[in-house]
Structures are given as structure tokens and as C-alpha cells.
Image (cartoon, rainbow, N blue to C red):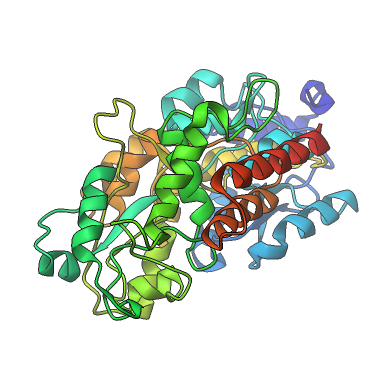
Length: 431
């Protein structure tokens, strides 16, 4: 626990606490007169997806209610963000509050200051947020981060292509999905017909966005716990991983009836936007991208297919919650800010501007009827994930495994075994 939690407060800090209590942000105490946001510099927040144009008014509202000034910086480039953040924190010039990928908590707790229970208790977290948030962001009974939204994998489908194939509704099970793919796919002697001949973007990795997430989701739907209690990563247990990889690869296997995709296809998001493939599995943040690429495309979004008769449906989560730096001079005030931003009112503003599904239970009903976000809102309640010490390396391992099978470089058992060994090495490096 941060020693600042036990600091005796001077009069000015007590005044600030009175303001916080009156405005509903809780009664947690700041750390001292010289803290940021009180008499010194403002709290500094680093974000990625939050545009200044619509988050700055919220920060001004926070300042008006608490007297605490906040400076926001949009870091922009997600590819370099992690390294920029770690470097800045190491050099003592990092932000007080920053976004993290939800998988970072397991390996990067050392840079985060957990929330004091006076600001949010475990019971409050359980009552307010969807289950995956508790699994991902709570360690040793401490809350390390909180999100405004939780995104999940869902099924995008081309309404016109499905109708032309006589398919009235989007497939809800993987069996229905396979049948739909067979009806939708058009193959000539030269291969899959490029103009609307692909039933779904499935089977490869190099030209499919988030292929690694789709495969991990398939494994988890079949009950595989990728990260074991002893910290090992195992995707070969009980042949579940092999079954999932076979199922996924079959869509790129020319000898199978569900063959519908190969390495010659356009990148999945472009192929779907251009009407070249009828279905793809992806996150909600691609909705604006698809609309920008083809404003005339008639597409729908359905829950991601599940295993038939599976009593516990699962989809895969991806999101970027807010965390507080361990080196912040005002961790308590920083957590007050996070509680404000992830509260029902502010998070709704952020999610509407971002076109993002909610992470809070009490705001899910507000978007359940939305034709696009409603599916993602519902799925937040069944979202799952697993701690990854290095998400970039993990993605590369899964993608390489898929591509080695597709190209015939390795058999499925060999590819799985090699991927398992690589995942274990990553875990050991972090221990």
C-alpha cells in the first residue's frame, strides 16, 4: 500500500476533501499541500482513443466540481505507446493517470498504484462493472484499473449477400456458421471468386485482422484455460487447442467443404467493406472504419457464434482501462478522477463519442436496443480474457502458428507445441 495513504492532512487538503465529499467523489484524502492538482501542477492524463475535443469538457467539469485541474494528452500512436509510457515513467516524467491494455495488470503491476478501498471497494466493483473487469483488473483484492468500455468480438455480416444465398438470419452457432459459409462461398477452377465469393474471413492470419484473438476465443469457448495456476501457458491440454486450430484452419483448407478463404484474399476489413466476403469476426471499433470505407454497405452485427448446446457462451474481450502511476504525487486524487471518468454519467459521454460499448452494468440497458452497439453491450456480460505478459509477442506466436499450418511448414500438433513453448518462455521472462 502506498505510504501516502497514511499521510496527515494539512488544512488546505481538508478543504479539498470537503469539496470531493460534497460532489460525490468519495472521501479519500490527498497526499499533501504540494501535490499536483492542489497548489502545484495539474494532474496529467495520457490516453489513446479519447479525443481532446470531447474529453476536455469532462475534465473541466471535474475541475469545476473539485477544484482539481487536469491536463490531457492524446498519445495517438498505439504501436509506440507502451514503450513511450514505460520510458517516461522510468525517467520520472510520466503521467499521473494513463490507459493500459487490460492484459497488462499481471505483468506491470509495479508501475501502477491500486485504488484505495475508500475510493472503490471490491463489492462496488462487482456491482458496477461487468465480470471480465474483475477477472482482469483486480489482484490481491486491489483494483488496479477501471474502464469506461469493454469491447468484444462479434459477427459482422453482409445483409445483401446473406439474403441472396437464402440465409434469413445470421448464424448463432458454429454449425450454422459452417452451413452458411458453404452456401455463401463461390469457387471457380481458379479459386475463390474475388467479388463476393468468400463466405467468411477465417482460416489464415496474415490477411485477417485479429486472427489471433479469434483463435484464442475458439479455444476458450471449448473450455481451455490457457494460463494455468502455476503461471504456465498451455494451449495443448486435452487436445482442445488442436481441435480449435483445426476448426479455424479448415476455412482455408481447399480439401474441406467450408473452404472459403486463402492468402490471396484482400485484407479482411477491406474485403468485408468492399462486399468481397460475407462475414467477419471483429470488434466494435471497426464500425466507423467500415462505414468510412463504404457508406452504402448494408451490414448487420450479431453475437459471435457459439458451440451448439453450450451452456456457457463466451466471447473475447479487448479494452483500455485507466490506471494510476505508482510515481504519481497524488494517487488519491488521480483515483478520484478515474472514478469520475468511469462513473455512469461521464462514461456514457465518452462511449457515445467513441461509439463504444459500456463496461458498467447500469449503462448496458441504455444501448441494448442500438442496432450496432447493442450486441456488444450484451456480450460484455459474457466476455472473457486471460493475462498476457506481452500481448504483441503473444499475437505474433498465434499468428505464426496459424500461418505455418496454412503454408504447410508445420503440422498442427508441431505448430501447437512450438507455440506452447514460446508462450511458456514469455511467461518465465516475466517471473
